[in-house]
Image 1 (cartoon, rainbow, N blue to C red):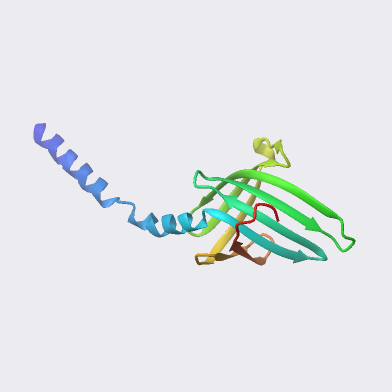
Image 2: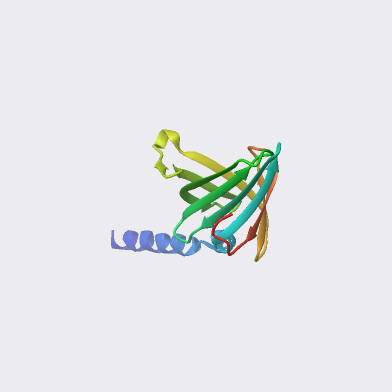
Length: 143
């Protein structure tokens, strides 16, 4: 029985050593690059939108969005939630919209497939809205 336990221990140790997480290292590097404050500018059907999205190291985010239409009407909204990166997709789960906490059934989601990332910008595909999204690093706190 003692020899059997030793063999089992050796097998578990070997299995654990082979799972060093090396497959997630590229994803971890991209995740670290995503941390920061990003500006996205968008124009759709006469609506101009500027958003500042701050992705924090702890996995939370804040998004401040300012929109103006052709008549000049300006609307500002602030959203917050949690973000993650799975190696392909930047995912945001909205837990608060304009200061109002959302229940589980009301959570909003945004998912972008990251196609390119550099020090000061990244390009992603919003597969829901069928558009390319470009984000650039910014120091601004309000759009």
